[in-house]
Image 1: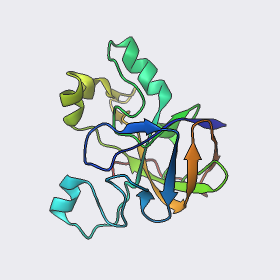
Image 2: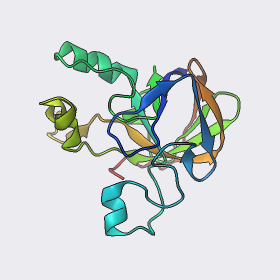
Image 3: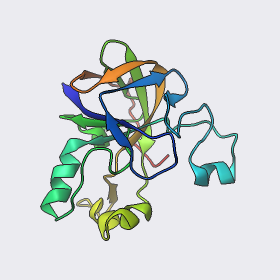
Amino acid sequence: MGSVVSVNRDKLHQFSKASGRQITLVTGKGVLGDAHCGETVQHRSRVAKDPSQPNLRQVHLIHEELFAELREKGFAIAPGDLGENITTRNIDLLGLPRGTKLKIGADAIIEITGLRNPCLQLDRFSKGLMQAVLSRDENSQLIRKAGVMAIVERGGTISIGDQINLELPPAPRIALNVV
């Protein structure tokens, strides 16, 4: 069983998000008061391409274990620094299949839609960070470690310390791709 380590939001389109005690998820939109909240795409690069696309990136999650890995490589990283809304503990986010549902706290349910694609903003935050969140598996396949994206199926308030329960989708399960 996983848990919430940090909750973060920012009303502006900045790279990092401010940590708080709780956030509110809005069904079909995302994090209340966050720049990326909306039914259609809110990320500037995606809006420029097609503003009518559905927003599959309503909530960004990163596993706390990534921060420990990055600190070992010499990066000073804290929850919210990489723009995630929810920092988790004890969940292999990157290993979840598309469509996995996370029940967080008493009411909220989100559905994993895909991987966050690391971008050059990481290097603007800290030189070499983009390369640090990329690696290769034993088959030389690229591994993107910068977190996962989700949509809000059922809204609710999420607080630090809330438990996270997983519900895997029915088989056949589909591995995560970049959204």
